[in-house]
Image 1 (cartoon, chains in turn green, brown):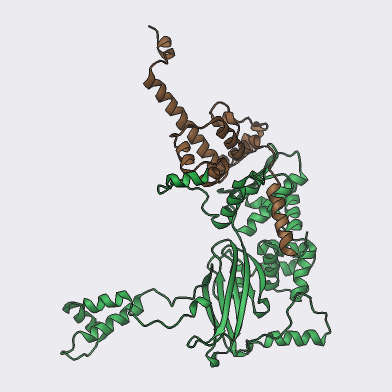
Image 2: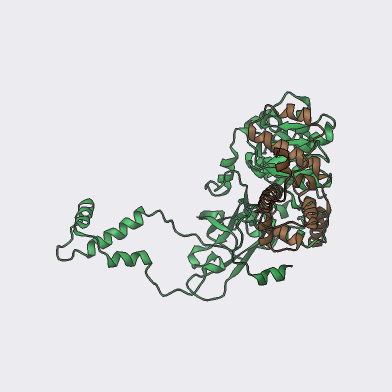
Length: 427
Length: 144
């Protein structure tokens, strides 16, 4: 097991020979049921970090209090301050399982965070890297004596949602429970492991005075011959009637000459449509990802931090971590373009960005590639557990399907279009 | 003629067909319930049995007969005893009494989920770890 990466708690259940099921539950976060080979039940109604913590808690019950029988765990048992020793043990077990010291100290080392300088952002980074909630991370930091109890109280005052919004340039994540992963040019051609609906905030240096911009390849297409949108045409064909025109004229106090009645209302209608219409500026689309935020930070935040960090490192003669890319960023900027991207579907996704001029066909000046491995939400039973024999052909297909369409487990509509020819081929 | 004798008279072809249809429908409903519980699609099942998906749909709607071999494979796939699918046996819980006592305080929805999961566990046996090993193998290849 690699101590620097998230603990695969769901895979662990399978290793231990326990059944693992994700089912919708109302008040329960999870249950351990010792019937048969034993099984862990986790609710689907909570965010993934809580699901992971719950599963770890249930493994704790299985491991620590064998013979105590069934464990039905609500919120207070898994997350809260419970007086029951059995639940406390399971809580400690879950914390140690998901946030082992090598993982926690590894994250803190990378961030240069020590006891007193540890701020809410550092605590959130620990939570995100370990795949647990912010509160759980703060608790574990206290257990590991990284921070004092008073410090923990201070950290708990900060809301994780606000921390995430800070990381996304002040924009609240679309899904408040999702994690926010800030990446920059150092992450070029790197693999990032995220979850469905997590937001990746890509910050890249951009020099606006050059006219070059970071664009998705799909954005750059030869300029189309401008055709008016269809709704505009209907307005031209059907000019508003006289009463509408009068009303609009009153409303906007437009002094238009009486001999040109058709033109002025057209302008007013256009303006009305732009004002009232909720349609925001369409954000660029990317392969398999939704762009949910697009901002620009001018000022001196361009490429300076990266260079300053490198200088500091050299000054201290600190050994450079082997996995860190140390070459200077290709693009120097007057500021930073900040793009927020979220992945609605599980599976591997590759985002490509090109630094190029939107108005010409010259080659892009630089490329940026980010690989993401998007982990699905779990629903129902683990398909791997149902599969006893890997050689059976249906297993591979079912597993593939789980990766592609996890939220759609039940499909009852018969395919009427199926022809006898299809039947022959599938037999 | 007594009622008993009348009931025993199964020579009436329409009556026989009616009971057959009803039983087949019941079997189909149970197969559907078991499939949905483990979260499989009709097309997954079709692949496992080597029959078209429309046939799986027809089986679950009670419109197609199930062969003995198919029933055995379905039972293995869904982790249910053949007898349960046929409606002849209920799943016995070892720890039924403490289980019912423990779930008494839960909401109806949660109680139902816990009891159904316990039933599944009682019938299911050990989970396979083959998939997990295969996944780990793939991850190792990726890392090198």
